[in-house]
Amino acid sequence: MTQAVLSVLGLLTLGFSYVFVKDTIKNKHTFSDASWAKLSLVGFIVNFFDTLGIGSFAPTTAFFKLMKLVQDRLIPGTLNVSMTIPVVLEALIFITVIKVEPITLISMLASATLGAVLGAGVVAKLPEKKIQLGMGIALLVVALIFLAGIFNLMPVGGEAIGLTGTKLVIGVVGNFILGALMTIGIGLYAPCMALVYALGMSPRVAFPIMMGSCAFLMPAASIKFVQEGAYDRKASVAITIAGSLGVFVAAYLVKSMPLTLLKWLVVFVIIYTAITMLRSATKNSEEK
Image (cartoon, rainbow, N blue to C red; front, top):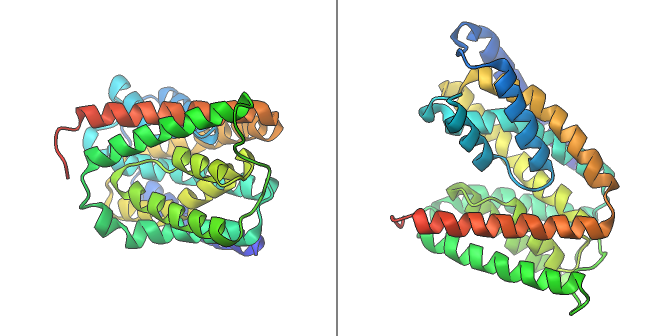
């Protein structure tokens, strides 16, 4: 079953790659004057940390604005197009090397994808500020619980590689909601880490699940941006190539990282994301 997941993901990626490469070659005369070196450095750094679970969209946007690398109107499309192949590589690597029970993996990947497709209309009507506040506070609480577990103050987490019964239902429903929240810019990585760990699975298992969830969503969305020409081609090429290298370097670290250190990484990612969400909520004066 896992092989089927990889095959479908491979076909989606091939379809995106064909459209992307064809459009880039056809329009290479439109490349911007931005530095290849700067774009490549940004691609390596953000995808290195994305593979560790930090996320890539927010830091990449910050780099684009700080270094004036991409026009504001092209940033959304550039983020999606340039990160698609690196994220797919993350998913392929972790699904291959980290064992997850097939029913759990496929169910949670499918639910996140359905959440993004079917839940988009509902979530788009929810007040973004309240979601950011709620998620931020919830993640901080989860981080405190994880810290208590690390210091043996209370039992938390586990070593399971799959879910059954009620826990599987909670995992599927939870990932459906997280997939839907992605449509308004709420990242899936940290909440998925929290969900997986809270359900008693190993923190390693979060990586193939969260990255696989995003990998199935991105090719289709990115093809739309390419077809509309709503992205920076030069930035996308540079970030795709350098970012893929960053993924391989970081993936090696995660695979070889001791479990205790990995647990600390998960806590750091969750706290970082919680603070980011709370800051966004304080700046968000309009409720959608």
